[in-house]
Picture 1 (spheres, rainbow, N blue to C red):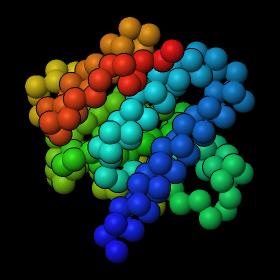
Picture 2: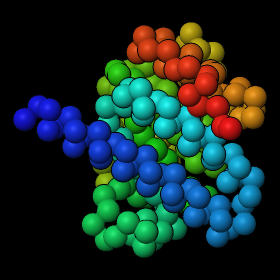
Picture 3: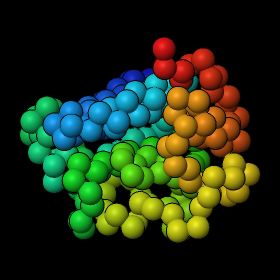
Length: 187
């Protein structure tokens, strides 16, 4: 049964990752945000590389009202996800991942990639809630210094792998697994 559980969990993680990326793509396409679509091809490549290394243990997605409606339209009414309780930018979406003992919060647009060293840290958001406040998914003091306990980086320099290298380095420190640049380069 453990093998079957691992297979189902991996499938659910992949499904959640694809939901996040599909909703972002739809928001960008419908809103005419071509910069956002270009930016997300880099995020898609990066998080798929992390997934392909089997580093993600859990995944959950949070939608605003726009993403919620799009998600139900694209994936059916049985789609499981969380919603924002407070006002966020239209189409704002967050992907929450447990990677090893850490917790990653990947904001869609105008947000950062935030990593708590410990998924069970007092100020880290909890997975699988039905509703979140936006501030619960942000970190007030984290910065992009990989050696610090908690970490946050803006998605600047996608074409030059700037943020991707930093996140890959942080995940390497936390998991011991090195994510090769070639696996997340957009061709």
